[in-house]
Length: 435
Ligand code: GDP
Ligand code: IMO
Ligand code: MG
Image 1 (cartoon, protein in one colour):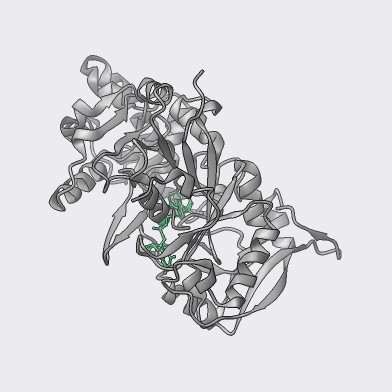
Image 2 (cartoon, rainbow, N blue to C red):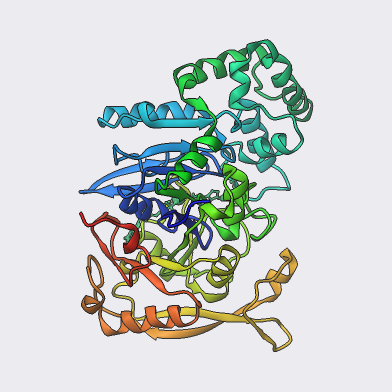
C-alpha cells in the first residue's frame, strides 16, 4: 500500500443542489482525475466562470480543466443520448471530452423504456416527484439482474437477449396503451448512441486503482445528497442510489484507503426539489424571496425548489454518515439583506421531547416540529473574499453552524462565480496548488 495520497470526496449534505458543481470546478485543476460514481442525469451541476454558465448532468465537473481525466465509474446509470448531447455542447465551447474520458464497461444504461416507466409511475399514487429521467427503473433493473451495461454493447451476439429481459417486464407493466417503441427500435437507437463513445468504454476500476497506486490525485464527485440516499435519506422520497460515501466504494471498486478527506457541501439555508419531508420549509413570500434571489429552479427539470432554513440535524446527519472532515457553506450571499435568519436546532417530537436525530419513518417526520433560533440579518456578503470582510452578524451565523456541526468550515461561497468565496483553514486549500 502506498501512503501520502491526496484524494478528496465532495458530497451533498442536504437534498441536493448545494453547489457541488461550483466547488468541484474550483478544486479540480489540482486533480488528475475527476470521478462520478453514482446517480445519472438526475444530477444537474452548475459551473459559472466569468459570467458564463455551464450545466452538467453526467460529464464530471472537472471538464473545464483540460488536464483532468474524466471517469464515469460503474455505479453510475448513464443516459447515452444525453451524454452525447453534453459532449457536443462542450465541443461547441471548445472543450474536448472524448480524448480524456473513460466510461465503465460495468455502468448500467438508462433505456427509453426505463424513462417511460418512471414517468408512468409518477402519474400514479406512488408519485414522489422524481426527475422523470428513468433513474429508479434503471437501478431497479440492475438489482434484479435484468440491467444492460455498457459492456453489453461490445458483445452484439448477446445484446438482444440481454435487452429483451428487462424490456418485456416493462412492456407488461406499461401495457399496450403506452408509447413504447419496439425492442428492435430501442436496440438500434441505443447502439447509435454508444457508437461515438465506444473507444471510451473500459475498466475504470483498474484505471483508478493504478492512479491511486501512482499517487495521482483523484477528486470524487458526489451527485444528489445524504437526505436523498436510498438507505439514509427520507425514504421513500429519495433517489435510487447510495449518494453518501458508501456509494463511492461500491461505485468505483476502490477501497476506503483511496479516501483522504470528505468535504460536505451545504447551502447556508436549505432547498428541496420534489416531494417529501422538509421541516424547515419556509412558506409564503419569504420562501419566494429566497427562491428568486437564489435562482432556486432545478438545473435538470426547471422545477421551483422548495426553500427552508439551515437545519442542524439534517446537516449533522450528513456529516456523520459521510465522516465529513470539512464543510463548504454555499450561497451565503442569498441571505443578504434579510432582517432575520433562522436555524433549526432540533425537533420537538410532539410529546415535549427535544431531539437532534432524524426520524426514521415517513409518518414520524410528520410528527416533528422544528425548534428555531433567530439570528440578526446582515447587509452584504456577496463576493466577499475573506472572513474579515464578512459583516459581524454573518460571522456569528457561520460560527454557530460550525460549533454545532462537529466539523469545521472549509470554504465559504459568496456568489456563483468560481472567484466568489474563500477557503477557511487549510482543509481544502491543502488540496490546491498555488495558482
Ligand atoms: P449542485 O447540484 O450541488 O452542483 O448544485 P446546482 O448547480 O444544481 O445548484 C446550485 C446553484 O447555485 C447553481 O445555480 C450555482 O451556480 C449557484 N451557486 C453556487 N454557489 C453559489 C453562491 O455562493 N451564491 C450564489 N448566489 N449562487 C451560487
Ligand atoms: P444534484 O446532483 C436535487 C430528487 C428528485 C426527487 C428524488 C428522486 O443536482 O444535487 P430521481 O429522479 O433521482 O428518481 O428522483 O430525488 N433529485 C434531486 N434533487 N438535486 C439532485 O441532483 C437530484 N437528483 C434527484 O427531485 O425528489
Ligand atoms: Mg443540482
